Length: 230
Image (cartoon, rainbow, N blue to C red; front, side, top):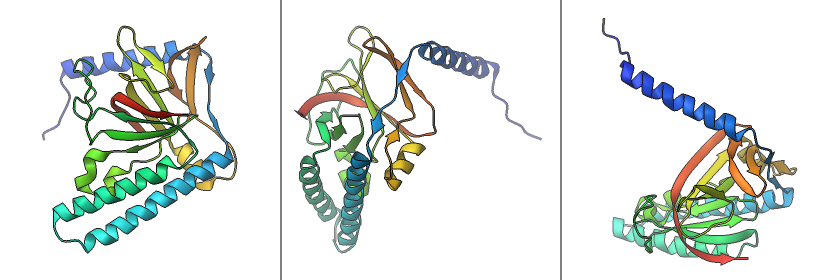
């Protein structure tokens, strides 16, 4: 009978990785933490935005079925993207709009680039973000509009790794969302205290830990432009 067992080298490497994670978690957990509180009014605004985008995706899918070639579908998707961007620009919940480099990826040694296919992010004051992954336009609108994310932070690694809460050019995007966040978003009946713990030492963020069930975790690209900041 054949059986699979990882070799000792793999087991040792995995054990070292796990131990490192546990050590980092233990170190971060020593520091006090804060949790964002999202008001029920903001939850309702975000739910309305989510519902509007879902309706636009359904409308696009219907019209795409009536469209002939792939090129025509791509053109249709781009038309919807323009409408969605205008719609999101007019929502007063966003504090920031920024883009990330889609050409050089998350690599930090390459010079920053700008492209019409750079991802666009809209972010609230509490760090909730919505991403338009424009590079996916050929796959359909449902692949362009990404889920709302509960907390977005930024890593600066020029010299010493620092975690920041506001977008800065050159910083790498990290965003997270929990099951609890999506439940609160769908219900929108009371204020929501985030289960994402932001550990701080004075004014410096030491790291994040999670008190709930993380559904999405995304390591993004570098910010290449802050389009607006209110």
